[in-house]
Image 1 (cartoon, rainbow, N blue to C red):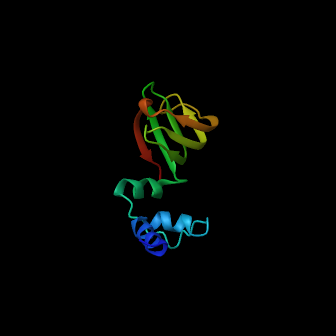
Image 2 (image 1 turned 180 degrees about the vertical axis):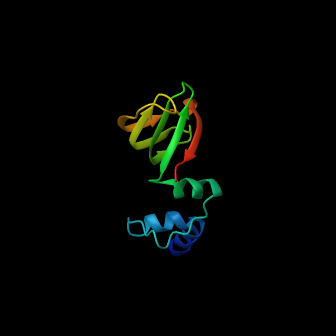
Image 3 (image 1 turned 90 degrees about the vertical axis):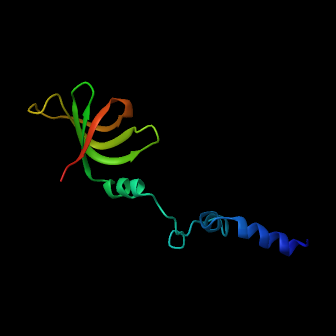
Length: 109
């Protein structure tokens, strides 16, 4: 097998995403066509939207959804904390909420 055939076989085994990253060392977001699961699409639609998170200790956090991870930890920006439903808000700023302490998540509209 000559070098040209090896290169062709290697290119055929690469995914579209790998090809887009490796061609010139740059990522071409327009050409990358990745099918995302429904869950990923839902999370992506929530980015920068206001979430209301109820925690196991009864506190309620509201803030802009920035990201999450596999452990269901959530990062909120411009976060405010409420000790109960009718209490005053306390400004917290950027917060990481551990997934194991989350009871419910609501999208505020």
